Length: 111
Image (cartoon, rainbow, N blue to C red):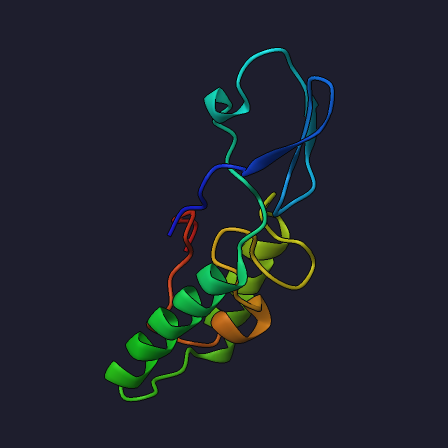
């Protein structure tokens, strides 16, 4: 799942702020013309991602990854720009847990 664009609202003359992530921009053009992937997921997007991952986990018969594989996945996450120290900004998952689910995948296709 990829994030949607920022959702800007006007906060001053030619100043706009994303309602989801707080990113601010000063422009003279229509803010709907700004196509910036919002790094913050809405709660609905997080729930959708979680449900999808859990459905795959259930379908797999609750298969977990070997410890080495889970640790390798987490190390990849730690070196990724989308990792915030706990969760992934692309899928919203807590990566210490997602890395242990064998059927899970990285939304940036890194594992």
